[in-house]
Amino acid sequence: MKEKRKTHRESSANGRARGAGPWARRSGAALALALALSAGACSSGAEEIAYSELKQKIVAGQVESVMVSPYSIEAVPTAAARAAGAPEVWTAVPLADVDRLTELLDAHGVEYGGRRSTGPNPFAVVGVLLLGGAVLVGVLQLQHRAARNASGVGGLRVRDASKGELTVDFADVAGADEAKEELVEVVEFLRDPGRFARLGARIPKGVLLVGPPGTGKTLLAKAVAGEAGVPFFSISGSEFVEMFVGVGASRVRKLFDKAKAKAPCIVFIDELDAAGKSRGSGLVGNDEREQTLNQLLVEMDGFESTKGIVVMAATNRPEILDPALLRPGRFDRQVLVDRPDRGGREAILRVHARRIRLSDDVDLALVAERTPGFAGADLANLLNEAALLAARRGLPAVGIEEIDAAIDRVVAGLEKKTRLIHGKERRIVAYHEAGHAVVAEHLEAAEPVKKVSIIPRGLGALGYMQQVPEERLLLQEDELEARLAVLLGGRAAEEIIFGQVSTGAANDLERATELARRMVCEFGMSSALGPVSFTRSGQRHLGGPRAEEPRLHSEATAREIDREVASIVADAAERARTLLERHRASLEAVAEHLLEHEVLDRDELLAILGRSEAA
Image 1 (cartoon, rainbow, N blue to C red):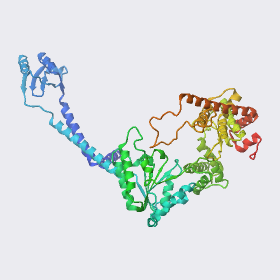
Image 2 (cartoon, rainbow, N blue to C red; image 1 turned 135 degrees about the vertical axis):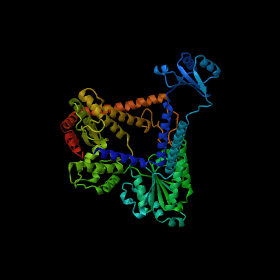
Image 3 (tube, rainbow, N blue to C red; image 1 turned 30 degrees about the vertical axis):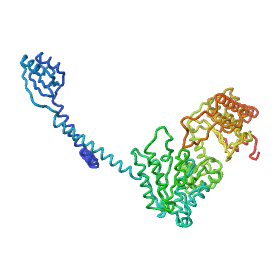
Image 4 (cartoon, rainbow, N blue to C red; image 1 turned 180 degrees about the horizontal axis):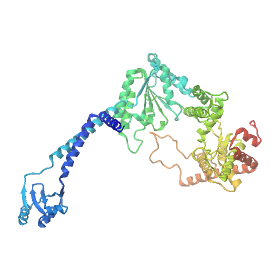
């Protein structure tokens, strides 16, 4: 058995050696030869010493014979010296007083001779030259192979919708009706370019899809190709930029050459900001990225709009793109793909629910209502988490309980029931969350409470209170003040019940302070400072903030802003405290329910407060 295993290992090693390239085998052989020659050259046992030290050894009678050459002096020690530990040969560099050396040798009876030249070991020289040549050849071959691979189109993927390779169409895209309407013209142009050319119409060369991550920009681009039935070229912006200067520009040329050969078609560049960042926006320029961007600009100008090539790109950072990309003739049309509203979320849920077996108690309209701010990718992940949970529980279908648990996991993090909480801490958490809930339910301008829990979740959250906000584009001052009071309700409840506060309100204070500062600096909701803005827009000319921006206000105004922010937060805290003192019985009842059951839904909360949904 041992012999068989040894044979297997030898055959595996031979297989790996055969798999190596020819240059690697040549380099390995040269390296072995050079090492062998070097070992042979170093095995002479010679020790180099100073010329003065050599003369001292001659005077001491430790030298038996000497051989002198123009490059070195080799002295052979006597037998006694070798017995005492001397090497086989001492070597020294000769000086100009060779005649005096011969006199010294004659005086002490040392045999000596000479030779014309003693250069380096010729075998060692050959070995070093072979080794250097092999390494040089290997490096050149590696560079050639890397440059050849990099000069291609990298991760370019070509899918031909006309051959059924791309099965996505507009029916698979939900929650983006306005964006689809903007792209209908592109689909019609790709289907019949001649109809537009006969009328002299010019379809936009480029379409830039702008929106937050996960809103379906890439899916929408695929759907355009699927509806039109044309080839779809997709590549990421980061794949253009490489360490070799000029590779990105070469890839852009090859990409558009392939597209012209397949026209009509769609060229889709994902994460355009990776290659299209504004030139000169940083302290240090990137020649490779700028060359890539320049080539992209040239290619988009270089083909006629009637050729049937539409360039689509996606980004979630349009403010940093180079202005030359956004001018007419390049990316003529910008399409916003925003987070879906309630109806859009319901439509997206119905699309993803096709692949999931749902029970009869699931109302997707209610799920859409509970998921404000969710993008398409978030909703797909939500249903997938619910399906995984149902599978772990061994259920035949996904029920509303699994979907609720998935929402809680996505919003607040994974439940950590095994985390042990001290009894006193558990009471603090219960009253803290009860304070949030009671304040929210007694303020008319506050958003309704959906759920309260004291089960630890996520990365340190010991409890949470979930509200269902109305989808609003504008918020009034009283609504913002109500949000501040709700945020500070937990801290106020701790102060009322325990006479002191804990560290659990740190995140609440941070959010409340940030909201109050925005009210003062952005929204002009300060009676002391008036309707004045002290901030700049997030978008900057040529993409990105300037290196040094002038101050927007003086030191005195900054101190006044700080005072106003502190005053607004203090008023909200006092408002929350006054309300909780007035409804202390409700606060204690909600907290005791949480201590007993850990979770409180809206119906239970309203029952404890003695209110109905209609009220």
